[in-house]
View (tube, one colour):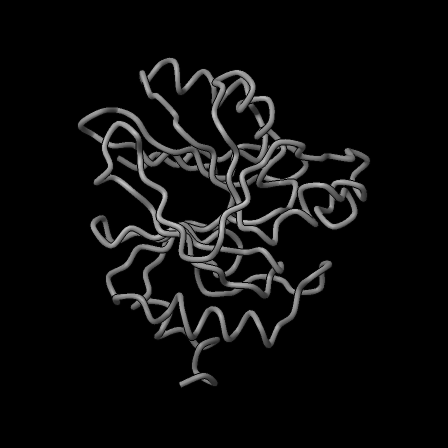
Length: 212
């Protein structure tokens, strides 16, 4: 089961629940705001969240992470290059909004990590490093469910911004075209700020034409 819930702080961001239908355990991805709303959904649905997964270290994807982590006693996970963002309000962009957000207790994971549920080891997501929007950007991929949670690396009919700390357009294009758009055509791409799209659809977009 995948449940998308837009949450609004300074910006509106898509938070995602990726839940095993058998055990009703799962992961919460990119809790960008509205901790109380997300916790209410967890209680109402009877979800057991085992881990909070971050696609990258911008504050609009992690503002509610610490509150939810503390409430549920679950770890926050992100790529090993995320420390610069988790611990630096300038790099995670919260300083510019007067928020000064820091994450103090994070599990930093290497590229290629397979993140499985304790309740069902067959239910998992693979972390793939796709720098460019940030140095720590990743997508989480399930081949079984044909889905990739891509954060802000790629959107429907566009790709992520690169003018923030650690961003680089050339690197992002290599990540998007070389990794994300090399996934199977039917793979559903779930981004941080737009409606879903697919690999096949994005390969046909005009923005992608120069890379063919």
